[in-house]
Image (tube, rainbow, N blue to C red):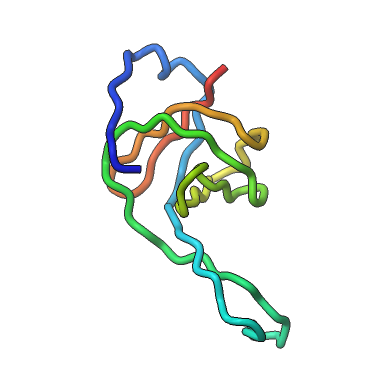
Length: 104
């Protein structure tokens, strides 16, 4: 996600969802364990996203965590946004949090 896109104000009338923080996924070596001795394959660490407006497509990982398609960036929502996999919309980023506006 490198280029900001310019949009009219009409997308602000779409359903909006608060993004608390952005993460990137780090794949772990085989046989990595969590604190309960269970094998884990990846961890999600906080990352920074440049302020701006982006046209994105999202993919559901869990109720609160969604991946931005074609990136290694994940959005953690304040509340479950009840989005479908492969929903698209406009992501406004400011101070490393943001709002996802779901395209109708």
